[in-house]
Image 1 (tube, rainbow, N blue to C red):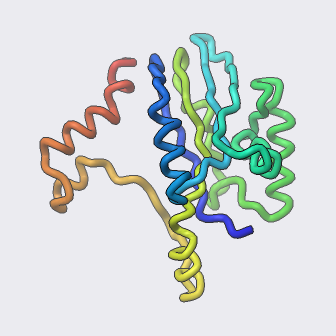
Image 2 (image 1 turned 180 degrees about the vertical axis):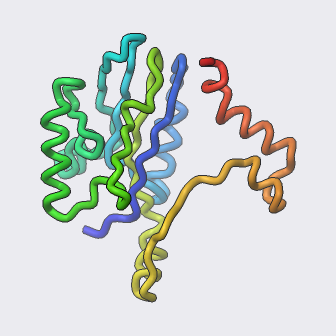
Length: 183
């Protein structure tokens, strides 16, 4: 099976007010064959830093069996929460032994769980960018490879004319409001 580029997105929530909008949008993207959620975890961290993990997914039953808990394997956390750290780490090590690059090339692991602030929640989404398969394949056939990637702040897009200052400020405020309210 050909799989598109995969991205781990970690979204933070101070006081989640879920109304089904996020799942609905992920379903819309799946229906249009744009992205597929390979795996998703909700992680709750209390004031003392104790974790509670819940598995989320919009995979079919067959896909869920095929992919298992991939987020847990990538970050060393099993679905059983803190008790799953060892099995999750073992799964990650097995993937690495099979040639799957689990950690960044720099050798430094991304400590996703440490990045989640105490007394908050996070959604960890492992997303396949299915739309990018033909582009990736064309790049590879031309001898190209990924050097780096990242999301660009709306504020940085003003300078090159892709956003108005007002729109960029509004989007930036939305992106950073929860973090600013924490301090």
